[in-house]
Structure formats: C-alpha cells, structure tokens
Image (cartoon, rainbow, N blue to C red; front, side, top):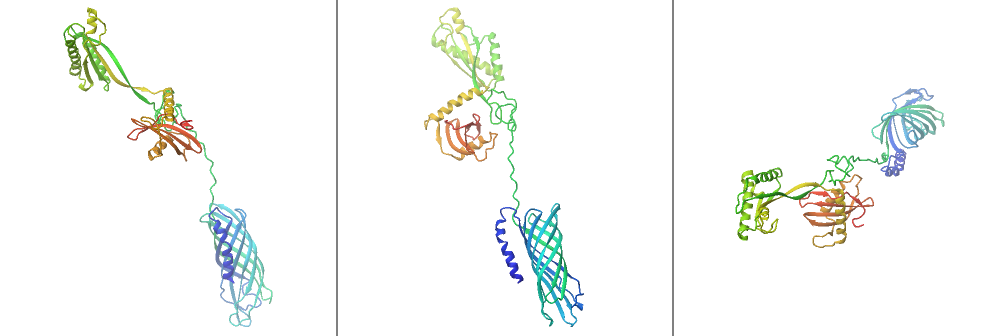
Length: 467
C-alpha cells in the first residue's frame, strides 16, 4: 500500500519535471521525516501500561503554487505507532497513515527565509499489527490538521523547512477503543521545478558625442578641434598629402669665359644652403647657362663647369650632402634674352637653382568628395581592365577591410554581413565594399597598403556603391 501510493504520487509529477527547464514553474515535490507523539498517552480505556513507542514518522508530497504566497498540497503521511499493554495483559499497538490534502501559505520575511502555515484534512487508516496474540482491529476516517514552519531556500529550487503539525480526532469508532490526537515535529526538503527567466532588459541608446563635428566620436578621436573643412582619418586626425614645389632662387653670375662664382653671388648661395638645411628632405638642381658669345660647343662645356662650381660650393662650403645636389649645363639653348647684345649676354650668362621639396598639405573634404565621386564612377564603369576596378570574391582580406570599416562607425554593427567587394591595385589596394547591417545597405572606400595598414578614404555612406 505504501509503495504503491508513493509510486503514483511521484509518477504524477513527471510531466512537470519535463517542463521545468523552461521557467520557474508553480509545481514542487518533497518529502520529510520526523517524530510523532500520540495523545492522550496511556490513559485510554484499553491501556493498562505503556511501552516504548515507534515515534518515527515520514511523508511525501507534491504541491502547486497559485502565487508566491499561496498554494495547495497533496501528500501521503505515516505518523508512526504507539504501543501499550491492555487489561488482559496483551501487548497492543496502533498507528495512523493516509492521504492528505491541504492549503499552504508562505510569508518571506528575510533573504532566503520564510514562514509557512497550513491546514487541511487527512483521510487516515488506523490499525495495529496484530502482534503478541492480540485481536486485530482497524478503522478509517477523516481528521483535520494544521501546522506551521520556518524554511530556508538554498537555491531558488531547493528549500529546507522545520515543521510542526497537530492532528485532531484520530479515533477508532468501530470498536470504540481509541480516541487520539497527534503532535508532529520534523524536517522537510522540497524541490521546485524550473528556473527563473530573467526579465528582458530594454536596450539603452548610447549617444556618442562628436565635439569637433569631424565625423569621429570623442571616444575614438585622437585629434580634438580639427578644422571642419579637413578630411580626417579613422582616429579623427587631419589627413595630409605630400606636395612637391619648385623654387627659382634668382641668378648667379660669372665673368665672361669664367667658371668662378662672383663673390656678390655668395649671399644667394648661402640662402640656398640654409633652405636645404631647414628642409632635409629637399633636393636642389643646378642649371648652368651661357651667352651666345663664342663657340656653342665651348659654351655648353662652360655652362656645365659653372653649374658644377656652384654645386661643389654648396657641398664643400655649406655641408650639404652630395646626394641632394645635382647639376647640368644647357649652354645657349635656353636664353633669357635673345640676341648677343651686352644686356642679353649679361642676362643669359647665369646659374638657376631649382629646389624640389615636399611639404604637407591638408586634404579638404570637398576635394575628397569630388575625388570619391570620380572613384565611384570608375568602380561602376570599369570591369577587369588593367589598372581599373574589378569585382572580387569575398576573401579573408576583404573581411579584414569590413572589420576595419565597422570599427569607425558609432552605431551597433553586430550582424554586419559583407555583400560585394571591388578592388583596384595601386601602390597598395583600393577597396570598395558593400555590406548589410540589419537590412540596411552601406558602402565605404578603404585603402590598404601592401604591408596591411588601412585608411578609410571617406565616411561610410548609406546605400550600394553604384546606386
């Protein structure tokens, strides 16, 4: 009987176990052990002398919570046995067991701690074991019970409770031999199925500030207050280009049929040397010229000697590296004044110095936009021609270009997917890529050097490359 009832109760909980992995369910199961004391003790009509009781009681149960504070429980309980000697000097025993149904209430009063209260009815069977030659007797009935307890949650599923219960009217009416009550103290362990489903957290929009309005947010901007007209890199710094300029620094004169520099020209040569010292990347080209007086072949050699004289003076007297100085003679091939007058001869007998230097010049946004419009048109018009753009497969390098581009954006780029890749081989590789972010199409232009360094050539734009 006991094993059968336990199996039925535990089997009935299996559907709830299967559902427990989804969320914290209202279903729970448990069991308990304790000590039970029947009352009154040894003062029944049939009791002559009391012996040691078998006070150990146990129960199993399952419950359903209507909310966190109120529920219902169904269980099976065995309250142990009492023993005595009757007036015929026969040993007797009796015990109650049966199904219970009741209401339970919970009151959480501290972290993990709670009080419980219960009340219900027990459909009991009162019987003895027919030992020592005594007559067998039994009866059944319904007895009310109530109780209270204190519990501690080890986890959201596992709870241990200390319980007290009082049972009334555990009577044997068939032979009118027993009228008992019962007090129970014990411990119960229960398990609630499932787990807590965290509440969905609404995404919080993070607005990133761009103080200098250059298109790069302050958290990534390494150059504050860049001019609004300048194109900037991914870290917010002005992009510069190298510009080559030529400077003509006046004429250095010589006497007729001479390659010796006039001392009044030393000042000009010194200015030239000082400029070269201040601009260590610059180089100088010395061009020698002659007048039309005399033989043209001789004048060609004379102009070259004059250019060489100035070049050697720059190197030897002012310490400029030989690699930065070059020269050439032009003879009478490039006169300033035609003819052979005194005025013409004086003007044409000269040295001209041309400085080739590089300096940084900021790239302006308008220039970039125009340049990029041209590049976009070339991407869409050219197809697999030498030096032109061509559509490529999506490669690991193209994915690296996408990752670099996404790192420059201030929106949520999770889920970005590369859709199209175009490339052009220059001194490195230009990439035009299209990519999708949550259904929105974007494109960008990126320059990648052969060493792997990358630079965003324009801010990311909405739409496809050729739209």
